[in-house]
Image (cartoon, rainbow, N blue to C red):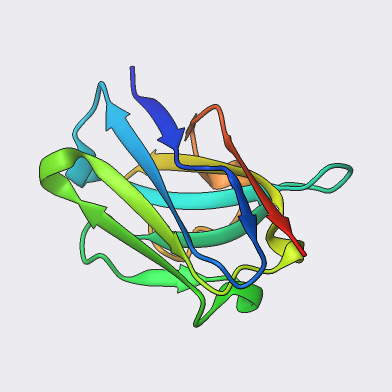
Length: 125
């Protein structure tokens, strides 16, 4: 059974940077497409970024383009989300998601079978 464990969330000032990590276990890392979603209180879970398993192509939601970068380290079975120029609107619980096969254009939460427990990112003004 695939398990995902996120880490790296914390309180950070606006304009700062943060890197989230997510380790996949119980499955073949390189065979899974990976994504980050986030959910703010009272809001629906929204897509942030994704990376395909077969060619590492990536996609981002418009609000984070040029600020966030998703990357993978196959040797460490880890996917990262580098977040720069953080804004208060980025405050949310961030979730890592994985799907066997899949693609970078999977942007719906319904497209992912495996989820982490979430890590809290709070951006103060």
